[in-house]
Image 1 (cartoon, rainbow, N blue to C red):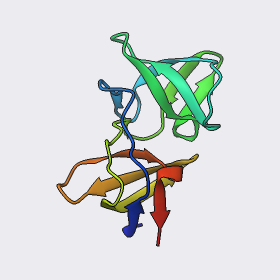
Image 2 (image 1 turned 45 degrees about the vertical axis):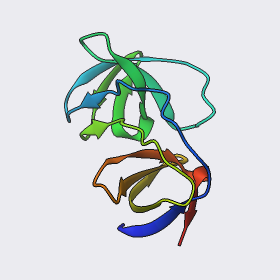
Image 3 (image 1 turned 135 degrees about the vertical axis):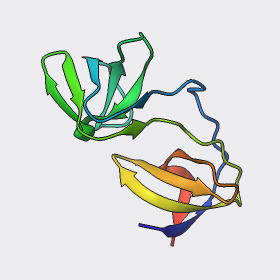
Length: 113
């Protein structure tokens, strides 16, 4: 995608220890209410848990298998910063900051274009 965007409000990550999974990894999926439709709460084999895009999982009951690599790292961002958009998924945008850090931000903290 590689489009620029500007941060329009401060964002702080709520998950300092994000899930980092590889294609084929298996997780347990739990039904939880979420303000972001399309994201599922998943727990990996080591017991670490977090939100991942449901579209990136093959789910049967409570068992899920990753269809692609997934790094759920969220970025901290300051209003006025600029980022490069890498991809969009269910209300979130994976971005690269000027310092090279890569992670997710909610779409509503960005002005795209």
